[in-house]
Length: 90
Image (tube, rainbow, N blue to C red):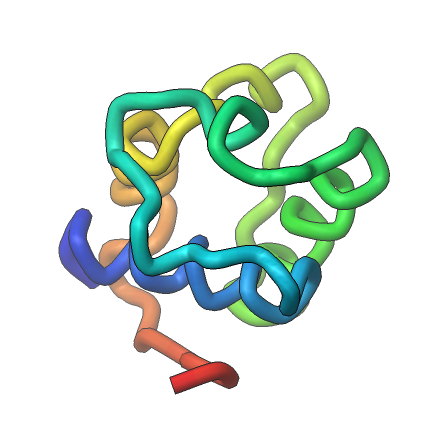
């Protein structure tokens, strides 16, 4: 998966967890929590969905690495390079 596909995967997971949020206009650099309504449980759901869909384990100490779409792409790309993109909200 490319970094852009990783970001698409994260956006798709957010669309699943928070279906009322407009994810099309998300800015890569800004914190996700500043752009859409995500509470700590939503964030945990994102982490759990990454594990369920892609087998990616994100240690709690690394949660801050998933603050923005850009940082998600940077952090997750090496872990998801050999994964296939699975979109549920396409």
